[in-house]
Length: 461
Image (cartoon, rainbow, N blue to C red; front, side, top):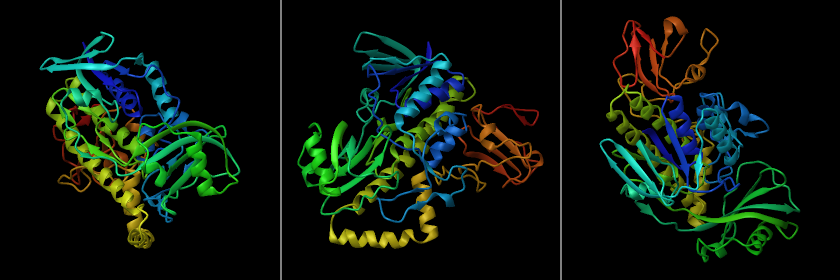
């Protein structure tokens, strides 16, 4: 029987499958779509996601020609979040379209013998103590020990597992469109999302002369979400914002989205998990969606891998919900706060001015930069102050780095007697880069943890 069935081949599902294969699991990866859409919902990686890919040796092919923006934004306010103040080797957003990330991860999986099976629509799911059986519209059935739904906001896995998705519907509607234009030349820069006359517009270049426009205004609020985006609508919005010199030459793609905010009340039900958009949806403000899903995958992958290998009990899997559900809550909260700051209202304009002043305070700016970048995320604390925190990618005396030692997807034990100056005498780093245990006592032995094998006082990697 297959170890894990991953449903959904977006960035979350692909990274999860990659992590599971690294852990030695037998993975089946399926997707409802017969082929990729050719469109990229997300356009950049936040610093923490860049760190994730680097720690698995997946970043190199993606770096070529990728613009680097040393800042993030909060509600598009005119004071950027300074990523250069963060403790990371990658103090910038990396301008990589989602499609390119998906292709790189799919190629990596193919090299490992995992073939993405397309055109499979999940219609049935049952589970028992032995595993799960997934049924598809074409009559295909796939048994597995575990199933993970990475199948988007309308997740079939989530619905069939009976996982509730509470929250609120969208209060405003906006358009995202890939366009070919003339008359203006927007540069890759931070978006400006400050309302003007009740409208918002931002645009960034993609590739081959195509630009990504994101806009909303009074007209968009009166149109249903499933109504097609027309060239006339896009041209009208562009000219209202940029003036009559801008000309829409071609509309390559257009869709509508809202600021709906919903989150699965449980990320695990027995042998069923949800991750990425299947677990949470929110406004794209701040560019956190794809990055939140990648971090879900990175958290779940090593834990599920340890259980599949028989090195950890199933109770380890409960920590996936315990850690990632609060992370999702925090992102939904900050995106909703950003949405409030974008409301075209005089009182809100005063609030925006207050936030602009606060972002000029280095400590406040650094705090929000850590939130939006993902670098500031910490899990539940332990007895030592390092526990639950992300381990910095230190260069060690032998010339290696912490990230390089994590390439194998296993725990790493750092010992100050061997690895030089460290913030503690001994540090046990989880496969996802967070500190699992630390001590200032150089003589302390590593406690027994699920998924960690220690032989003769040394960590078995």
